[in-house]
Image 1 (cartoon, one colour):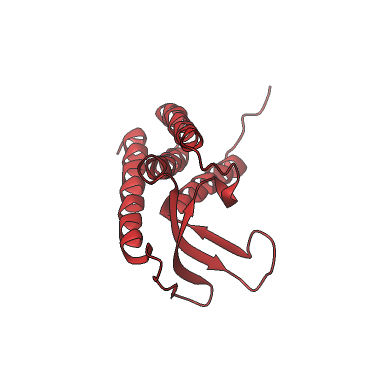
Image 2: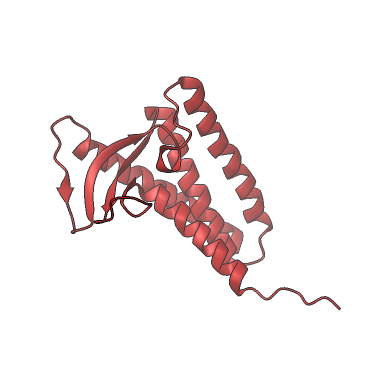
Length: 163
């Protein structure tokens, strides 16, 4: 299969999985009396509406802010789509597909709900730091996976040797 087509197909699959999982989670968890559902000792289901970006940075409760963040996600997706179109490797095509699907999934949330629907609550006994408490969604997992794939490829690819 053409790596471009595969990358865009992966983006569509990530977007669809993200939106389906959020629709399910909102229906199950988005009410004042919805309980937190324990899945494992470190992972629960709970509803959280994120009006910012990672760790609620750049939080914005205004319409301008939410449209600006959605616009930024869409613009980034278009740029990454351009990179996907030009890529020469399957790994980077997969990475770009994950990034596009995740970014567009979170952008659609901002446009339709005013915030990103997060529902997977990862927690540890640590009281502080990035592993203490983190609520995320399928789009966030895809974005993380895309970044990891790009880092992996940059570390394992053979750079041309200068003459």
